[in-house]
Length: 167
Length: 431
Image 1 (cartoon, rainbow over the protein chains, first blue to last red):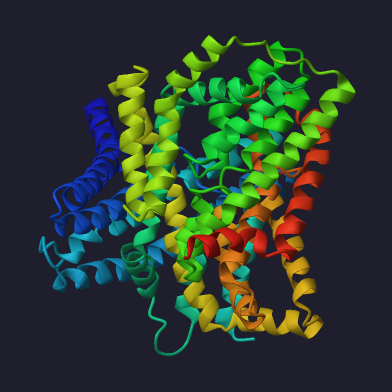
Image 2: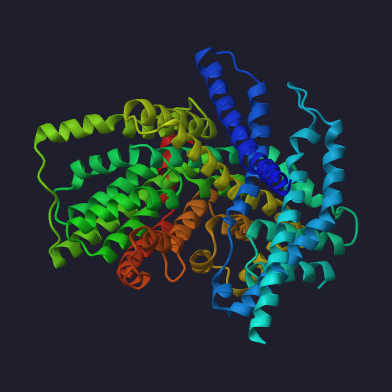
């Protein structure tokens, strides 16, 4: 049962962090190709491709940022961190991730409110509500809160082990 | 100083002190600022609004994932290999031939992608391996690879220039045109240095190719090289926009890599898409979060304060350009270029406008400057990349790259103080 839950959880994470942004990127890319083909070859420009490229980009960027987080590839300034001692580094990670976690928890509901509020606006051609176009931002915030909480928890455990070993 | 501004500055310092990921760190700072900030127009939800509405409205930023994707496809397929072999035909016979090949291949590759990292990590492995096999010192090979990779974002297309255009309102077409001559100047300056050092150290000439082989290699490389024509030709004939050119050239690269060179299978394509998503996530989030950051910076009148401070020190345009160059060169040594562009450029733009400096000229100067920073010890990212792919220790690479940095700084000074080097082409083409 635990293994099933773990596998299901991993599948959902892969879906949100890898497969959906990859599909969004592909849709965005293909929309561009269709746009260029219809405008320059058929001389009959399409407008809906413009909307798909923008919304595809937003989904790729925000959900892709979660894949970046998973791969620990977000840009960081590491110069000072590298000269800290091992114990200080653990503290720095706990405080840093903790601060972002608190900020994201504070910001989550206002962000959700804003995204849901944008449901009143729809795209001109495809009639896509903006709460759907912008929804990856809510997923981004929620996923980041989960991942940051896990990071803080792991570092607290490392710190406890470190202190026990020191004692 | 008001409490909200203090919170903002503390958050900004925490990003560097606590090694916070820059984009989430900027969001954190913005959220804490909005919690404390008084008055209308500072609702907490504003951070979400700024990120989302700007990602939606700044259409030019969509070019970024497309250029990233194109570089991924080119590095997966045989295209980089073809570029290297073609560059060898052009300049390989000279003394220190492979050093020259390294620079020329980078110039050609830079016409296809807008990223120095893609150049160093894609072409780099092949270049360093070939140079080592032909008796060049590993440190020198790595240093040439890192230095020549800086041409990538200076010569069009260029991801940092897209960011700059988005923030400053300068024409992306003019920025791309403006970067051409400085990119070629850097290449020429590096080749002069390589020629001098090749004579001094007795580096070998490349193998002599018979005319038939040269023609055969050139014909084989033609489909790969034609992607430069698709991309730049498409933009400058006005047939496609820079963003569309990114998509078109990516499609062309897929077709060439998959069907002409037969080096790109479905699995390679999937890996290219996945890696593009990862890079796009990192770059686009920085841009999105920077808009929240810029909103606060503007709300607190920080650019005006910075401009006022600098103008109180001196009102000389030449001296201020020198000061900005030094600050950006130092920043480039320590901080990622995308972060510098989105955080620090908006702070100096009012000053640039007050001094009546041409935005295209300034954009090219800043991009060139930041790229030099990417190869500058001790923390230039390109140094780590070439050290990583070759296994050579950083110490030796740093020793070898210093003279090349001086050469590039001379070009930077020329480009800074002779604006026509940048503005000549945009004026000629009539943009």
